[in-house]
Length: 115
Image: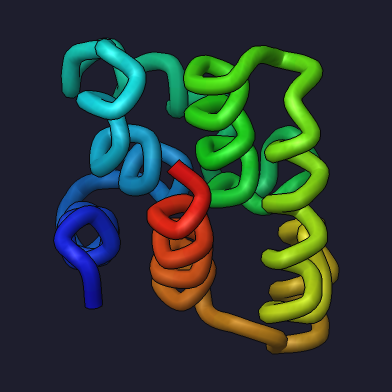
């Protein structure tokens, strides 16, 4: 596993949510502090915005890095959906497609290849 993926997984094992784990692992790539990343990601935890929180965090990182209209965001969504089987938290959980820590890992792996 690459460095940022390991970091995201470690954050998820601790007191961080799925979205916070991904955001904090990649915060330095977009020039934001760890605390700012944690705060930005908080509303996206646990599928509160319908999509998986790890997906939402990756989309935020990509939009900050490449712009809100970047094709990278839809590319990420496609890659994540192909790997996991869905991008909506409810679908992932109800169909037992992947545990949350697995979604964090997959999100980070894909994000590392795109940044």
